[in-house]
Image 1 (cartoon, helix red, strand yellow):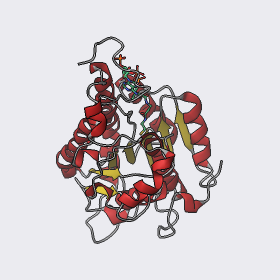
Image 2 (spheres, protein in one colour; image 1 turned 180 degrees about the vertical axis):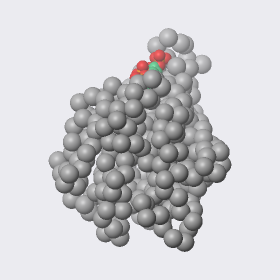
Image 3 (cartoon, rainbow, N blue to C red; image 1 turned 135 degrees about the vertical axis):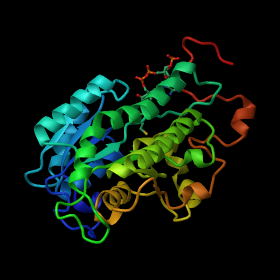
Image 4 (tube, rainbow, N blue to C red; image 1 turned 45 degrees about the horizontal axis):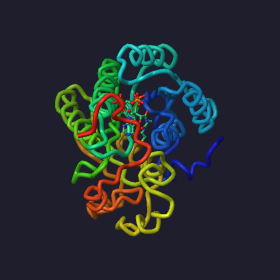
Length: 315
Ligand code: COA
């Protein structure tokens, strides 16, 4: 389904700023990452998105390609970011078919609601592996190409590089670990690790021209994350908790992406761009899905549908 530009990109950016560039994105079939990639493709880039689900990844890639006539978008399924070899093979295919990797979005993530009581060791490890190890694997598999691109597209901050920008990575994180959130311990710990990884990349690879930044989306409407965390009947109340009075849109995350990857982001490195309407500063006691803190913890009520603890007894 071809989307109108207004669904994923503001009018402030100039067409063609990412001509002859390639973006590689993990978790690229998801609602937020697909908008980020779609925006880059609209502005000239070709793209490769990878994901675990073959049908979904291929279908979304075809759909993203409708953002610009002549765009090439590869969709490579059956890629699990926890498996370095499968990720490396996808990067190799991207480079062979599209000519390189100039920009990377490490977006693959795992999420579900569960209290620590309900969280098995393996469930915790799964999210750590997807988010932290998966982000590290994504970096390791793409960094030789990012270095190459960074060397070709240097900016002194005064004269824009005639060939545009390149050699940049964005890690998609969250805001829940700035405070803490019950039922999201595994995700909070993992996202803290992702932020830390980005900061280290910024200082280790900055001298070689790579920039590394985090985008931390808050509550974004029509995404898997917010649909899981908030029940429909909570929406009005949850909007009211966001200082800007609403959920964000995937377009607003895509705009932040273009800001970081384009000439406007030349000196932005080791930063976090929070796109959340200041929601995290107004921390709520409602953790989502109607679980009111701390009543549900004291009552012993459990999150229903939790699939963990099959091999392990509850604490
Ligand atoms: N609550 C508690 N534990 C859960 C769970 C839930 N809702 N869902 C999965 N787990 C546990 C499993 O029971 C298993 O632990 P166990 O071996 O002790 O039973 C462990 O997590 C791994 O689950 P499994 O389904 O085998 O792993 P996976 O690697 O295929 O799945 C997850 C990864 C766990 C992140 C899964 O939730 C998932 O694939 N989610 C979809 C992607 C996603 O979350 N995207 C985020 C968008 S915001």
